[in-house]
Image (cartoon, rainbow, N blue to C red; front, side, top):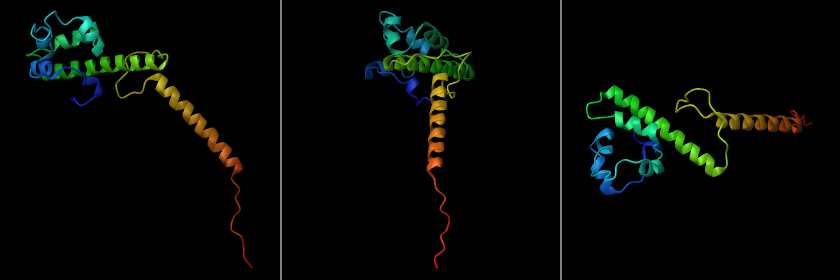
Length: 143
């Protein structure tokens, strides 16, 4: 499990981090010391955690098996990454391209793939133009 990914980072205080760092997500989400008013959408939403993503965290308890935790964590990262990318695209004015089925985190999104294909096309056109100007002079004999 890779914990050093941007999708696993969020800005919280040192004090809050100290309260949650040795606890399972299901435990700290229910902890009144961490969330005195409850783990609401208002608090979690800005951290790219919606209801479905929070449900994944709530399944990761102290007695959850390592295999289950690994699966939940992978799905949690995918959900947060998708939410972060969606927000970045909105901020940049990029309309999202709808995907068919789930997207693995190692797969570039469809709009990224489309952009890469366009760049390859432009690169091919540049190569053709460059080839048109290439002159093969060959070796000249000097007498």
